Length: 363
Ligand code: SAH
Ligand code: SF4
Image (cartoon, rainbow, N blue to C red; front, top):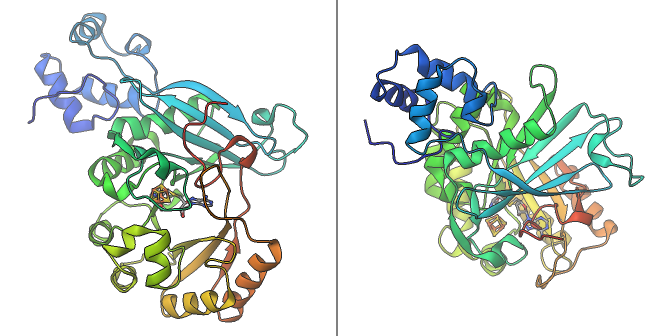
């Protein structure tokens, strides 16, 4: 068993907690109690764990150990009910996590305290890295570059911090998780997968309620298909041919469309599962009907759907948002060719919480 280097307990799995408990000469069942407190109960501090003996808790604290949930440094509420959280990690780095309620009262649009409206479903969008190295030309996160990977505990911790802030009861309320915040999850693969397992086995999310999006890190798509526990797969396609994709997503020079689409074709889908392709529409760049026809050819034979997102604009992004009419024409062409296509409405654009807008804006 490897030496425990981290001082944050959040992110340790059952085996690692067992090793810790053993090192302290405690009985094995204490590991189960710690696991229960950290994940299903989402307890914020060691002192708040009532099931463990005080001397054991003191010994842990003496070693500098704490649970270390990320701290909510700031939050911004949108008129549509979306909340963008700025989360501070123990080393002071910050990332963003977004809460998106849906349903009857979720979108009052009246500017009142949006976060407190009734909701019947919600989605949490989590970050996987501080910044991103992939450099997509339409994405604000790219402008930060990548500072570091998030640990499994920091990924799970974002979810727990939001669930606690929103006082969510997962047994009664339905919440989805999307790994679509800052960063490229497949460039932090080990920590991402460990976080998934802790969310499933610990916090209590079914794998069917999670989706991960990748810009196309082909070898990891193959690995991901072999995982016994995994979210659904989404691919950020965004361009219909290599020339265009090289230009707006430079990662395409490393894994061109042919390799990417082959990885998706080889991907072992579960019963009734579909792959999602995301396509950000950039006015007069990738949104012509000719591009839509190329998309139809690319995805032929793949059990999939396409989510169309009109560009969310931002400072320093050299593209503009197409008019609705162009977006609908693109969608119609796909649908008429038999490809299910949906237009994703932006969430929380007013507070810089929408796709591609996460860059730790603090006002
Ligand atoms: N790095 C991963 C996941 C995070 S990005 C990935 O790229 O897949 C989540 C989604 O936001 C991606 O599909 C991306 O194409 C989209 N996106 C990025 N910038 C955007 C923007 N300015 N407007 C709309 N969508 C954007
Ligand atoms: Fe990174 Fe995704 Fe943004 Fe590309 S779209 S820069 S992969 S976060």
